[in-house]
Amino acid sequence: MCPDKLSTYRPLLFSLIVILCIVTSTCGCISNNDFRTDNYFPDNTSVQSDTGAVSSAEDASTEIKLPEIIPAEISGDHYDDRTFSVKFEKSEYELVLPVNLSVYYGAKNADKAITPGTLWNETDKVSAYYRSFFEGEPIDTFYDDILKKIRHIKIAEGFSDEEYLEFMVTFVQQIPYDPDAGHPRFPVEVVYDMEGDCDEKSMLLIGMLAREDYDTALIIFPEYRHATAGIRIITAGDTFFRQFKSEDGRKYVFIESTALSFIGQYPEYYEDAYAVVVPVGDGKNSFERYNYISYITESLNKITDRIIFLDSELDRLYSEIKELESDLNTKTYESRHDWEMDYLDYKALVDQYYEYEDILNRNIEVYNYIIEHPYDVEGVRRYIYNSKVNDIEY
Image (cartoon, rainbow, N blue to C red; front, side, top):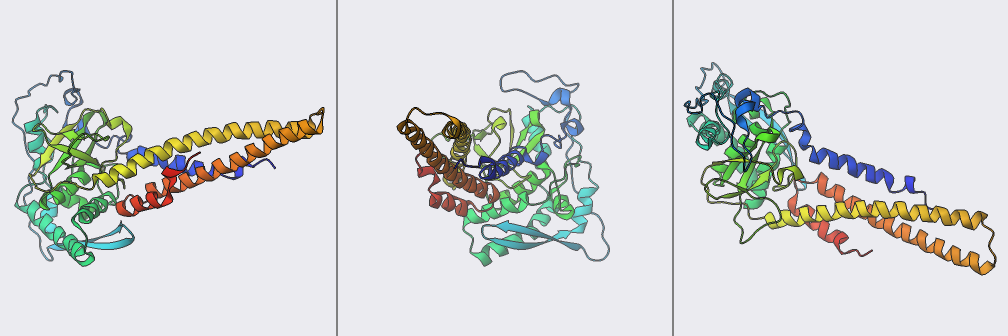
């Protein structure tokens, strides 16, 4: 009997395609242009290619104006809690973070616009501007308050250093994305408002990691109006994924902050995109578990290629099966032997079809698990290994 292709693997493949589109669109951060360089970095002065010259500015020498929090006077309770639900590994955590309202309203009322005419390649000015969102006594107070709560979960759960790092990353990634943000908000505003866009959420994460002695950076992509966090890695050689280099030679991996994804995972178009790397802090810690991420992302690429190939093969087999099925039912054969030979070919194609379909469905199942569990690095690595999909021959 000819397999009913549309009722078997097609719905699963459609699910795969939908998930793939969601992941590579970076949750609208690029397409919605939320990284508003036109608001605080003029478009005609903001982009520099790796080899091309930077556009001119009206006054490139203008001294940069830095945002500053001046704590507001508050009557009554100085703190207000914000509660976040954080999926991590096999559990879901309730994270209650206290927000100092004096710091929050001071941040909310601060002038956050950068000096007009600032160029992207004026690294000192760009770095000073963004560093102002992390530095100062009011900001230290905010981070001290929230990190006490987050460290309590680390201790209570017995997280390793790598798990603690991944917990902080996934917490920020799960804060709702705000497509309508204007000038960057301070990290205290992101926590109190319980939302943020790409640079805002990245700065919140970077501030946390820097205070936990990680060497971090803000990675800005002027062409795509997007920003991400970066964390330093130290490798013995080259990696298959891009390492974003600061002017002093330090290497950082990409951390998408707007949606759940693995550390180091990025859409293809960032592979060669011009990036401005703004180091924040000189921490001694670096990301060590990139070998796990490499295994996951390499497996994901192989599984994706395998799914595309198997889908094409099933199309081909289906056509051949239908053609033989028609011959067996309508063709006039010269002998019984000729009919039996076509039937054997037909049966072999059907068997091969079901074998490929089974392999395809198993790969789709693993693909979806990888995509749906970016908050569980160790669990995903183990799931891929135990599935044996990379060992299947066909």
